[in-house]
Structures are given as structure tokens and as C-alpha cells.
Length: 68
Image (cartoon, rainbow, N blue to C red; front, side, top):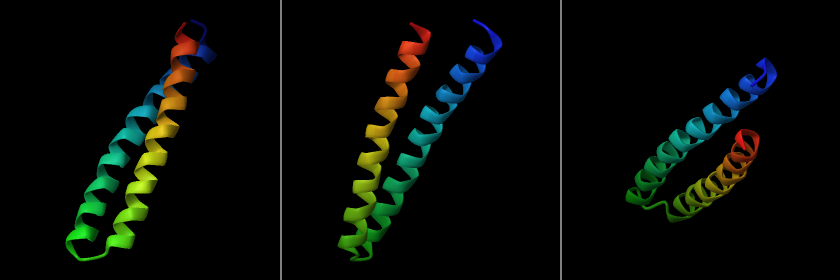
């Protein structure tokens, strides 16, 4: 794999892992908001987590194709 391809692979791989970590952190925040009685905040945070997970699916698909 040429240098540019290795770099792209590494960056995409990093982003997927990074986003997964953030999704977990946001889920924790959502749980805290819900415990404080902030249901609407919880709902928005969980919606953001869902969007982040869907975004990660696209990044993972791109990475799979790149590695294909």
C-alpha cells in the first residue's frame, strides 16, 4: 500500500475508534441528564449518538472498500 493509502487507512481507522469512544462518552452524559430529570436533553444526546453511529457505519464502509 502506498504512503498516501496507508495514511488514509490510518486516519479512517482512527476516526472510527475515536467516534466510538465519543459515542460512549455522550451516552454517559445522556444517562446523567436523564437522572437529573432532563429528558429532552437526554433525547437529543441519544439522537446525536445514533447519528454518530450511522456516520461511523459510512466511515467503516469506506475503510472496507479502501482495504478491499
